[in-house]
Image (tube, rainbow, N blue to C red; front, side, top):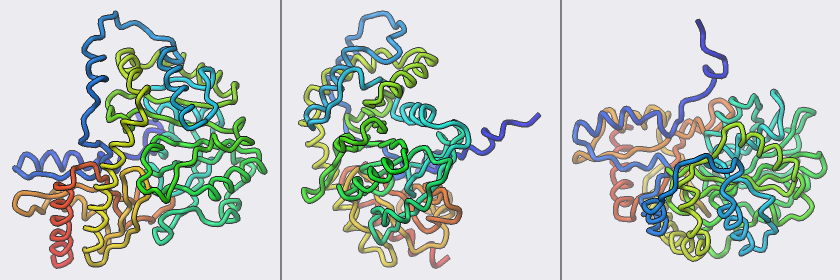
Length: 396
């Protein structure tokens, strides 16, 4: 008996596959600074916890598109950015992950193609395999801080099978915030070739410098019937385990289709949907505060990395990630060595090798993604330990 090709080809998460090694290191008494996963150390808002604690209803199936009050509250949240999202344009999903899967299923048939910008959120690979979609990568350069190339380079990737362009802004894993002219170019290309745009905007609140500005694809009026937005509460409100996201589109055929997919999985979690309703009413005030914290952490991690001889990186503009080129030949081996063989005063660091954030083979072999999700004091220690580790690794 053989498992399916789909199962065989689905990659292990580069973010999570080192967990067994981390567990063994912990058993040996080694403290690990975990910079591999986007799990912030910030606290979940008290109002969300209280709503969970005070939930007294029976746990029944909720409406498949989501609890109406949450839908309405989330839709009104977009009005603060003057984006025309109404209740009928939004359905609740079980995390942003499900929203992406629904978007791919709604726009593509098996073997259709979706253009994606690499390095990208590595789980896009798994979603593509699950839905039978082929990802067609456009490679971005670390020297350009992973901004988009000329539109002609993107247009070369379009074939008769291309159905959509998938873009993540601000970007996980690069921290890039795309400029208006870049997004306008993508919009023009999609209109010219009649393509959908799937815009993953789950980090939209986290733009770290005043000179940059988040611009939603929804702000481009002409593309709205070809647009699907992906939203998520996980990082916005530090509720990663709640698994509540949203799919937004002005195209009512897309919404109707996504609703059918939602009906097939019955409903998203009851308590978490209910618990999120109050925080959306003060969302901007809350996220502005934690955005300032991420800016401090970004500056600490960036200044520390610049002091490590041989590293290459540019300052991230948003989210809380950075891709760094390290002076080692193979970061997958290096990241494993950090957990298996190295410690400094019973301490080490855990990073995510960047190879699997690319679809093109043999890309990112010297790169890692760092999630600056620890407080500034711990980040400084982690970078000091990383510098010592690199020196030792290159001398062994």
